[in-house]
Image (cartoon, rainbow, N blue to C red; front, top):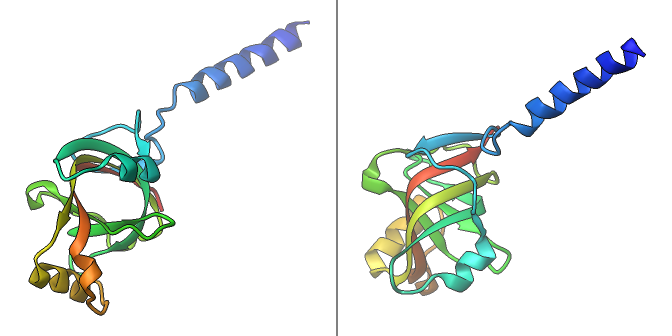
Length: 150
């Protein structure tokens, strides 16, 4: 009987410890400290974002990262939306090797049409050939990023 009680105590402590682990424990923080609570999906974000700048917390997969400094990234969804993420006040960067990883980002976003020279610059940075559709984008200025650990 004492063995059963000791075993039950061990399981109790194990469940208690596992239950207290934060959902952000599998992420590395960049910029302002944020958490993963209430992050919306990329598809929900795309349905909500407009030309008015608003605050969002989004969970998505990174498509590509600036290979010069890690100073911007793009997010992907299955429809191929053009979502460009920069970082508030150029205050932090993300690792250059996190393409394909999951992130949670928090900041301000809006739909916009880029000037042609800026769209060309982004295409060049990404090693892509420019086309006029690249001007239609969603601009997201993140103040905090949680990046999935490698």
